[in-house]
Length: 451
Image 1 (cartoon, rainbow, N blue to C red):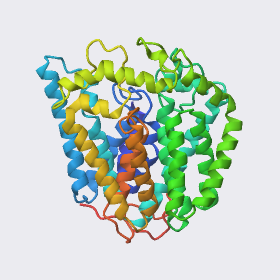
Image 2 (cartoon, helix red, strand yellow):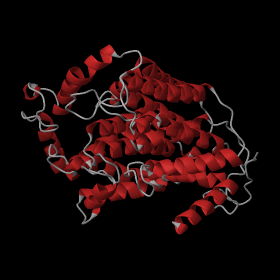
Image 3 (cartoon, rainbow, N blue to C red):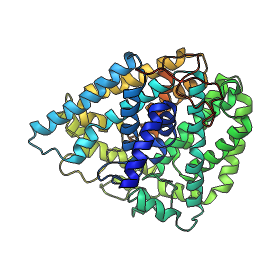
Image 4 (cartoon, rainbow, N blue to C red):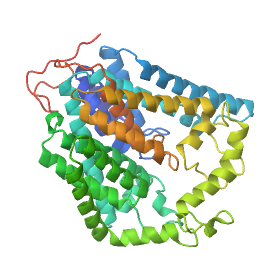
């Protein structure tokens, strides 16, 4: 406890004096550690949440504040409506407010704090380049660990199960292992790597604004791409391929990108042939192996992937009837009584349950503002802005069958990118950087102003 207290005090002092250190911590550690179980090291809290709250408190107290814009106010309304409607639903039904329910309702506040810290810190070109640099570099150990799980290096799969909870691979309905790194499910790792790959490809195609050399960026993209394939998660893999082609078309390099994607797809088919075969069997078997036969008639829709058929059964039989009765304010953060399956399998279903139509509309408004602002950016943030626009389009589709921006990994990374893009752009040096260049900013850099 004494060592922990010393680390907290020393870390707070460093972040207070060098806000960029806090920004780098949030960019590199929060998305990668978000999948760890609560209780490490503080009972009931995730290490990523502790980092966000600690860095946010220090930065807000010591650094000059940033102005609030439309995105910020809409995000705040989303936070308040999620909490307010959720509590109202529980109270009106006479249900007790558990710590788990409260955690779900205040979850969006964590993302707003994360976003605001980045907005405050990332005010100069040098700082933004540093944050993007560490965002890319931090994905390498995640990808390497996922590949170690894929080849079943002793201890790697057990480590994920011990610290990321009962990972999805331990469930009986999975017939083969899908890499998760330190996330609970393969799709969470896939979503995280999807965002990293899109940002990395945009920087690779726009080397003028890249914080890393092209060879280094190519190596990172290669490792991350292999790890994405090891997740055997169809949606983020397809989104990454289409997103790379979209970015290449935007930069006028579609032909070369198409050839590269075809070559990568062929190599991936050879390297991961066994995984692809197992995944195909899992998706198109007559017994609906992907989720198990929980509903009568599930196995008869063999012309569709089993995961899609199962989700349709879950939505229509368990959640949509409840949503229809509670469309205005939602049902609450907990599941309806009698629900067999413990997951909504859709971000839109989750939002409608937690806060009804107003929360869903606010969430859509946030995505719309982000897409609109990304289109207007033409400075050093251009590669990240283009990657964000592609990511928003991908997420709009992917979230029909997953909780992409509500689950660990991608959600934290998305709000970090939003902060990088919506900060008040400045070409002047920032006081937030190390003068000795240890975090990527050269000597002579100033520091940001403080209150």
